[in-house]
Length: 89
Image (cartoon, one colour):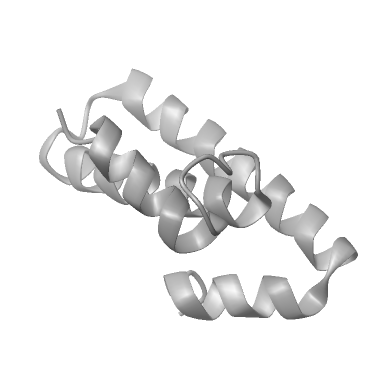
C-alpha cells in the first residue's frame, strides 16, 4: 500500500506541525497532493481506469477548495505551501 500510517504521520508532521494536527489546511493539502501524484502515475499506465480518473478529479477539487480557503484566510501560508509542494509550475 502506498499510503501507510507512517507516511501519513510524516506528511502531517512536516506540513501540519505535529503528527496529531491532521485538521490543518496545510497538512490536508499535502496529503491530497501525495494522493494526486500517486493516482496520476497510476493513470499513466492504466488509461481506461475511469473510476480512478473520477476519484482524481474529486481530489483535485477538494484540494482546490482548501487552497481557496487558505488564500482567503492567510495569503502567506498559501504562498508557502504552494512553493513547498511545487503545485504551481
